[in-house]
Image (tube, rainbow, N blue to C red; front, top):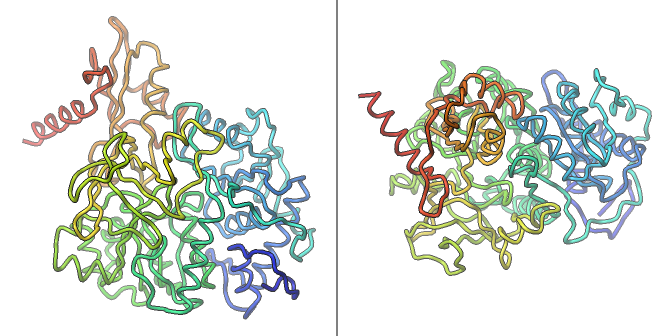
Length: 546
């Protein structure tokens, strides 16, 4: 490997792989966001200066850096800079409310928090609650007392920072928020194995542009020839991997600041995008746009759909509009790549077996999937429903600073995903439910964590018990609905409940409807029976429709 013109024997990281591309053909486009366009040479030099600026804040290898960022070119560069100087990336997504965000910063042991100016007030509040007193840095001027990281970088060298040790095999280099209980978030910690998989895939692609239809994360890119649109949040697993998959192959990355169907179509068309990833509501919005017609996007060769369950009829509609370019992917923060359906495979196999439109594909390369019963390590037979368990390089190290939860989730390298499903005789995976009761909603298919919401509801006056469910919604797949058992004589106002939820947990958690009951149904072991609640809701919905 060559760094700054010198040969070195240090292990190659994914950042090194990106820099190898950025040292070649320096005038080629690397990063785009609207009118802002950075060449490879400009991106490389900016990355180095950001690395020096971060080190100038006293950060050492192994320190955690919280990234509370919007979709923009500088967000991509600062994430790379954190890894460049050997620090740990801690993604801070925008959906948590004040209490949960503060707990996330605290538990992740972040030494610094880099915030987009849009989020500065929330970032300052979260950092201020942490006993670790992280340094607050703005990605530009902010209305909070914090240093402007971009201005600091302007005064820093444009050469690569030196003296950075390679990460250890069991060292957490990236941490993703994945829910938890109120005030005790779960943080999925990943090692460099995740990024080694990305590099291996890039190497395979360089040798064989046809590629494996079930590659890591999404189908193969032709090295250096693709133009990739990052439309999902960069601080979520989908946006993170989409952007890095582009960069490690030397492709140009176009960042969409906010998703709106018309703007997305314009970017896809004007930037001649060849590959992108959407969550289902994004794809539905595109399909419903009047300008989205067959032949409108001739450059587009790959669309990956993932992040939530997708309607089979909508998948078929997408193939009719975009052609046989549609792939599906299944993963979670704990295992960012589990199963996938390549575009060619989906088009060919689903024509032979229509039920495959309901599948999320087969295990990706270097990954194993088994279906197991609760508290059992033996694999179930074909078509028996159980918990999806997975083993492979995309599986997390564990939950950061949380050995109890780690022990419950990981056994001999196998992750119990909490998702329920079954495998058919050909190895195709079908999901039937989410044991973890995550509600996937919103225009970008974000996660609402039922336990966090229920814990907060139980703090409200007059509420004795609470349950949160995801109910079907035409626009977002699911909507939040809560059921409250109230104390006798208590005057609980559903509107006030919704306002309290919004204030503490954020808009995403705001219930579409709040149902007040004398008591909630329970199972034989005394747990709230969500199946009974769901059945009652379904019956009521059917009666109302009839």
